[in-house]
Length: 147
View 1: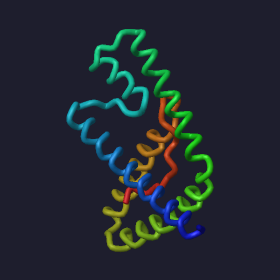
View 2: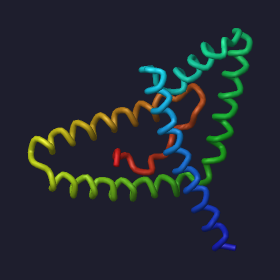
View 3: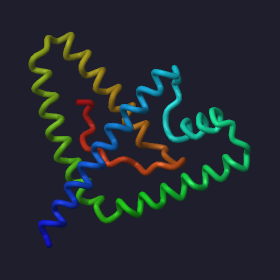
């Protein structure tokens, strides 16, 4: 029984990480494709309303459904959040170690540029996770580093 729970947990975690990666990639592709600077759930809702030409009643209903989805997903993650948080800490250690190893391969100018790139990627990631009142739960970080 305990082994089955472990397999189920690993499957859920794998599915979650794959979903985050696919969602992030799809978002980037769509932004590049449409030339948009808008990010986040509010921007997505606005884009959906514009592209589908939603009436105010439709938009209110869609917003309500997305908020309901958010509450349901938060409830689903509640029991496994402590495990995901501890995995995130370990993933951060691995990520930081990899960053340090890469940095040792670079000259000082490259190191400075790498630090700027990493800081920008972290800001972008923080923006995507924060201020998410419009429908998506905060994403537990599988590793905050961009690599």
